[in-house]
Length: 313
Image 1: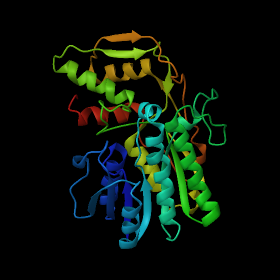
Image 2: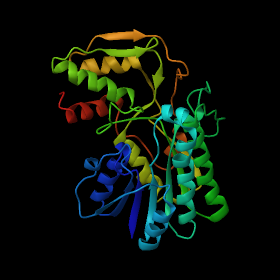
Image 3: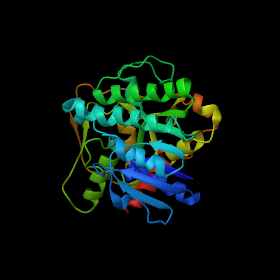
Image 4: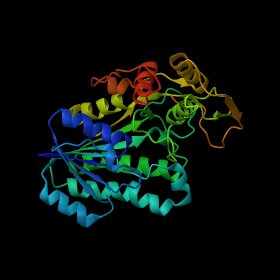
């Protein structure tokens, strides 16, 4: 049996591929390379790469008829909030319709379905930490599609018995995150500026607002750990879980940690706060803790691994 990973050439997906290879699993990666990179996928005779889109229903039918998938990890998406605002119809086709197409194929199988959702579904709901049973307020087409896909995922469990789980990722960072991407995380941008600064380039770190805004930053290896925890855990099926660390740090605190590790950082410039930016975000992870999840990396530990990978330290 094989495991299908949609978006497996992307930032998070490639780390999942890496870990499943270590577990001696047979893997099929489906990716249209619109944001993923073929070089992200480790070379292995355990991996079959197929270039294609989750919106190609003929391709999906062929895949599910040829392979006997034990599990499907669905990470493929148009990951840009900006693109979703500019092209809501196009992004909806990928981010929501693509999920439905996958679930239609899975209905007649016994495969487990793990959907990568986002903390963006909470929107500007002020209460922190965010808990799964709180009201949601998705503010962009991207967030709306993620929430709709969550509901399709969980409804597939109640209506058809699909072994399905939705995971709301908070602020994921780690190796192979593209700082030039329109949806890149603030950590990848900061580290890119530090790397350039240390090479002698004239650069600066820009903070929008006062820098006191907080985020729950989670290292990518811990996100993979959460995915691999839920896909073989019957207690997880039919549920949505936050995936974060349960603690948050401000951007100013993040810079202090980076400065402490590297010894120096570029000059910091403050710019006007961006409209629509959420001030504080932190995950309540008590629900996923109940089924055995504990993050392995503190923010400082994760940053050290990333900085070593980038050859900054």
